[in-house]
Image (tube, rainbow, N blue to C red; front, side, top):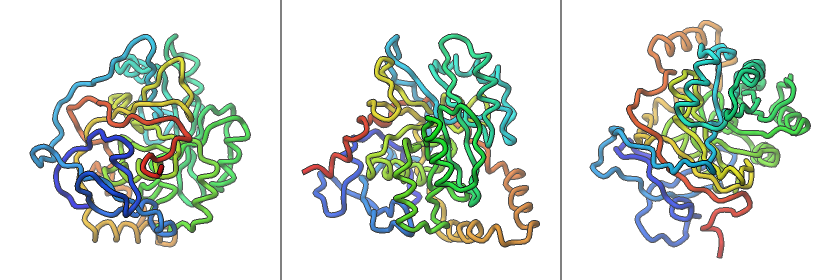
Length: 337
């Protein structure tokens, strides 16, 4: 995709995703290889998402949710001070969840469930805490387990997913195409057999991550819809202010993570893409990172911290409804005859 201006808008599933060669009512833009090398046959087009004035700036907008007693809001990806890269106190998370009118937080600290258990013990009535964990696997991929009852020690991605399922948990794929940590990131060049094994044990896909790029989020959404996987979203909050900037809305009497219709809210995201040469260079770095001298990795991570590249973008916006998704099993509407 190019780096032109514009904002992500709400489209129906049939308007956004369609197989190559299918008839279209309007103009289409780039061809997107949804899962990169190893699954290159999974190729789709999507409609142009142009801003009204071609402007990349994000403007202040109000939340259009009709929140009432029968509606539940969930942020599926939140960190606490139990994560090594987060300093947010538990009390601040509770205050922010109340401000954002959230019903539930999925607490997904890095490689621990202690923060989730601690927050669950002190959470007030009306705020449900889902005990989760964002696991780092031996190849650097991150996988989230939800509804966990005990911690899991497992480095192999496929074995980890099986163990999450065995204790009655749900497997969520966070930011699946993020460089360095997404399970389907391009530099890993996953074979089709691995992709299918992962998908067969996946319950949920994060179709929007509050800290990921426009390109990756768009790719994740299309991937989830192509495979008829339930799509949810999360802020990936590492600060209190990010909590509730992304959330999923259910009807409270019909909240079933994998089958319920759901509405996904997040701020409009500027359509900005990396320069191709930079993207290729970073993919090469991450592909060979484990074999490089340790000083190279230390320098890279210190540089990112000094340049504040891992901080969330500063936006004066409110989330709005972007996707209204059917329950699982409906599939991509454009695939139907």
